[in-house]
Amino acid sequence: MRLAARTGLGLTTFGVLGAVAALTAPSASAVVLGIAVMPSSSKSCVNTPFTVQVDVDPITSLIPVTLSVDGTQVDQKTPGILATSVTFTWTPATAGTHTLVGAQLLTSKQTTVTVDPCTPVTPPGGTGSATSLIPSGSAF
Image (cartoon, rainbow, N blue to C red; front, top):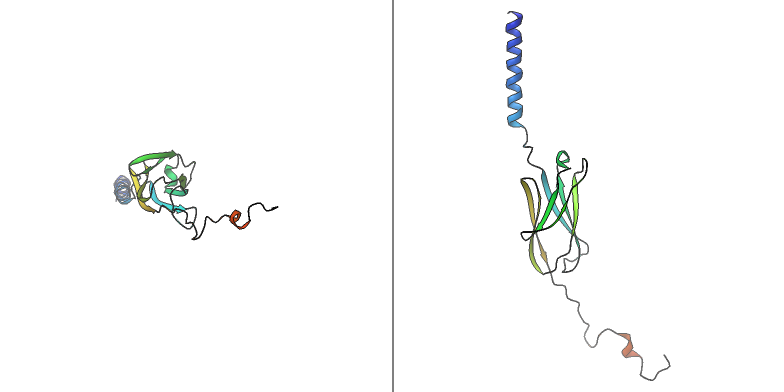
C-alpha cells in the first residue's frame, strides 16, 4: 500500500472516530445537575430560612444560576471559577407546597418543599410567664 493511501485511510479513520465521539459525548448544555433544599431546623416552617444548593457542571461555573420559587425569580448568583455548586438562602413567607427551580442557560432542575405554619403552642393553664407565680405586692 502506498504512503499516500495509508495516510488517507488514517485521516478517514481519525475523522470517523472523532464524529462518533462527538455524537456520543454528553451534551454541553446539561449544566444544572441537581437541586437540594435543607431546612435550618428540624421542621420546615414559615419564616424559617432554608439553604438551597444548586449543583452545576464546573465547566459552566462562570454562568449565572437563578433560583425561582413558584415561578418567580428570587435570586441569581454566579458559582465561581470551577465551582460545582452555588447556595442560596430562601425564607418562605407562606405555608403550603412550593416549587423551587434552579436554572442555568437552557437547563433546570426542580424540587418541591412543603412548609408548615408552625405556630407557637401556648401551654394549657397560662401564658408560660413566671410573673403569675409571684404574688402582687411582693418584695421581689
